[in-house]
Length: 158
Image (tube, rainbow, N blue to C red; front, side, top):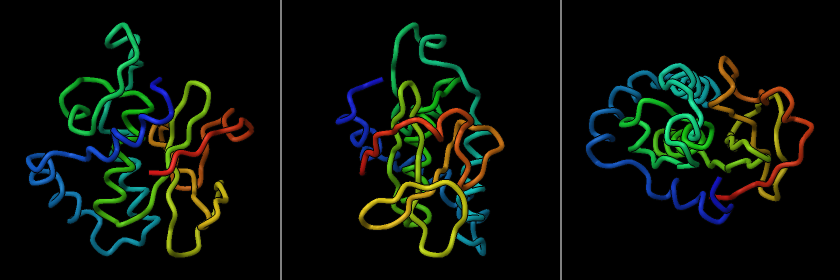
């Protein structure tokens, strides 16, 4: 995995105009009328089910994080690719703040919601950020991947 200081660069790069033009109207239509939690759950399942998982070692033979656009080009994604994409989509489409959650050999996302949410979260000085793991297949807002809830994590503000 890259050094911690590099993760925000992948998120800040966002998505190209072409991908936003093709994808965002479709996603906005699906998200319309949903609560923040329902909308993030939709985005989680879109990423969990829409992209096939494979580690970078299996796909490239070395560690190679993907920029948001690249997730639509390469046949496989891993945890950091999915976390980067969810961070971009939740900010752009829902206006939600996200942080990246870095564990030893795993990267996930946590979002700060405007309303009441239940589940696993990280308390930061500006509020609660609820676990949103796009690699944990079937998981929704507030669910941590088994085995990681007890581990220490580094929070990366975006």
